[in-house]
Image (cartoon, rainbow, N blue to C red; front, side, top):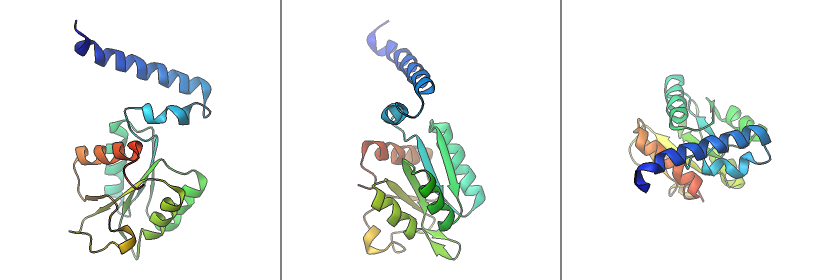
Amino acid sequence: MDEGQDRPQRCAAGRTVLRQLIALTGTFVAPMLDPLRDGLPGDVLVVEDDPIIALDFEDTILRLGVKSVRTAGNVARALQFIDERAPDFALLDIGLVRENSFAVAERLEALGIPFTFVSGYDGGAALTDAFAQKPRLPKPCTTDALEAALKRAVAGGAAR
C-alpha cells in the first residue's frame, strides 16, 4: 500500500488518540487540540429565529464533526450563551424577529471570535458599514459552503 492510500487510516487513528487524550485530560488539553479536529471549531453558536432552519444548521454542523452546537433564537439568548461560554465560531442570521443580530456580532468582534452572517435576502444591503466586509452565506446554503466557513474560522480567516 502506498503512502497516499495509508493516510486515511493514519488520520483516523490520530483522531482516535486525540479524542482519548481529550477525554482523559478534560479542559486543560482540549482547547489546545480543538483546531486539530478536522480543521473545525469545537463549539459553534447558531443565532437563528426560525426553529426549522436552526435545527437544520445544528444537524448539518454536527454531521460535519463539530463537537458542540448551541442555538439561540434571539439576541438576548445569544448574548447569554456567549457570557456563559464563548463559542469558537458563530453563525448569525442577520434579520431576526423584531431585531437584528448586530449586537451579537459586536460582542463577538470585541472578543475576537470569528463569525459569518447568513441571510435569505440578496446582497449586503442589510449589513451596516461596520460589517459590510464580514463573511456571508446565503440561506439556504450548501453543506460545502458551510463547512468552508467553519474551516476558515479555525484557520483564522472568518472575522479577524
